[in-house]
Length: 472
Image (cartoon, rainbow, N blue to C red; front, side, top):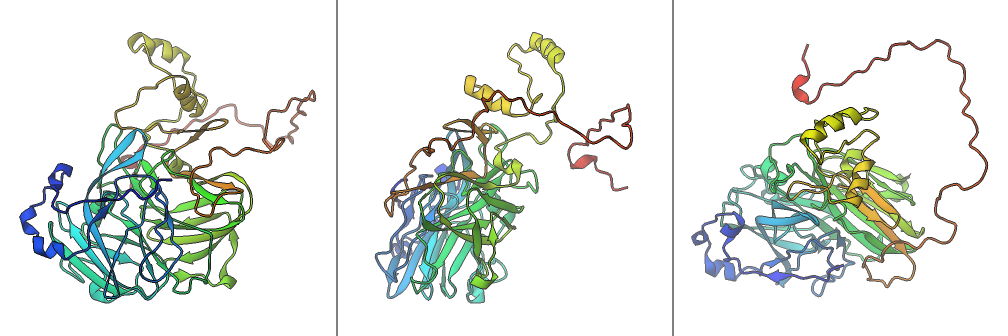
């Protein structure tokens, strides 16, 4: 884990280099001098938790592949400064995306406050269009809710607005624009907000993680998302990172662990944890009373929702944590590619190889052959594109992408040690292996069929895309 590597940048650094094209003359230098300094991070690593040195005490969260924004105290008010701006985000090693974010990254930094804090949020717009910020799930005055046109004028390029309210309710929330949402959220403008209990003894945990679910439609070889996509996203990410670029969640054996997950994609995500049972202890509506909780290993998080899950990490190992929609654990793919399982391609390969010498048949036995070939040779990919299935472990290809990571449970870690401990060393005799006995597998016995099957096998290929569906 990276320790916080936060660069303090002058607001008047030309944003046009990043494509914003903002007129700097619109900003008053004297007014900016009175604002909290702009703190930014350009790293996509998981930063160490930000322990408070002013204000009320709290146990900080760890933002997966992200960081928490520092503040200043001003006459008892906690002041933050967010800057909406074009950013470059590494989705995983080998791929970067040109997104919009806050303070150098997408998603923006996590905001951490304490129940009862008076909070003053300065928001500066370095985007090429107007924006606003909605504080998703917060109880606050209507005029601070951040819906441009309805509760406030929009923040024009080069302008700074201030929001001020009391963080009344402890819990996990999000922030995102309520101006040209389709474009701005598709470009990555979003972030997490955590309001801690005033009483630090309430619902204590040893390790507390937070991240957002988001998705992009970036054509192979491209850098910028398509903002008009409604359904066919091809990069499913946690905090704008895809496996193997998502860091592991590292915990000590017997730690009580909380994982807070917010969903700002356009579909639901059943988040599944291996090796442990958990309880859903919180939503963006508040904390769930103990008597209303039940054990789960998968919880479905709908669009615009947040879930906090808790469990005791009492089983050592490298446990998978992922979305259970299988196409959400893959990287960029073609939605129009037909299924070629069991389709013999030998003759076709010979014919095509005469024209394309390096042609390789794909998909006849499944998609695993892609990861096998990638391990043996450098398979050509378009520029700035990730393999569809990727990542390796101590036993070979993991064959995952997208919304996948690991919960790494280890004994003997220091309290604040979040560094990746490497692969789990399994005790002798606890790894599944090939059967080497002499006994043969028993014969398969099937009950007799009541009716003889038809001699004709009908094969149907479904129409591809939405354009072939008829309304009749």
